Length: 260
Image (cartoon, rainbow, N blue to C red; front, side, top):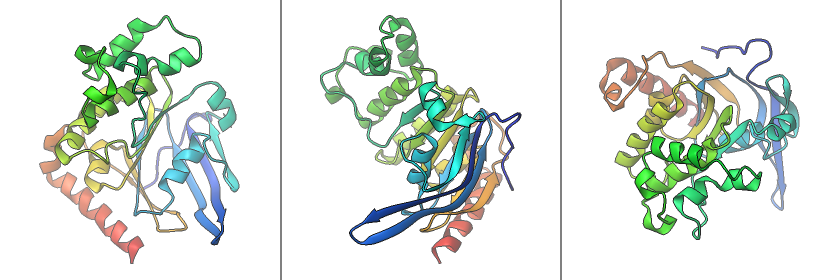
């Protein structure tokens, strides 16, 4: 099944994108002829084995890497235009909080950088949304891993981006915390912005996504684009349903096929 096409050029359009890296070992092709479309407000997960180019694709969409060939457009314009318009928010596996800044100050970091220093009320509202109001004056060393990732999410949302790019943000957490944060993310997202989410977890991809894009081993290509037709809002209980298990089995079969 294919994704929803953006209307009037809105959304993310990846066309024939390839990426090569050159090292002492020679030239390596990380991505080959990738086509992908993401409509505004969609939650799309990139799923595949290690080394399939998921993170490279995410970084190309967000302007952190240049494609070797092909094009990416955001709302019909260039990625550079989208970066200048601050359309992206990033959350990575490592929260990368500044240890000398409090939770509130870390969440304020991007606003401080661009000179919008009088938006404490907005940041406090975000901290309440991610469940950290009572920890606003704590420092990163005083937080659990899950709490640090909540701060990173609040920081990414502070500029109200249209597209949230998330590179395995919960991978380092224990299974229970990972599932809880996934459900919390869905409550925060609520269709308000597009999300591109890199994961190795089939269950996580099904729980969170409108679509799961399955990628092959290197060089990375899109081998399947599966619409997840489960009702929203979703919570952890949906994992027990037969449709959920059917999607898991379908995706597991696809992943095993690209590894073969």
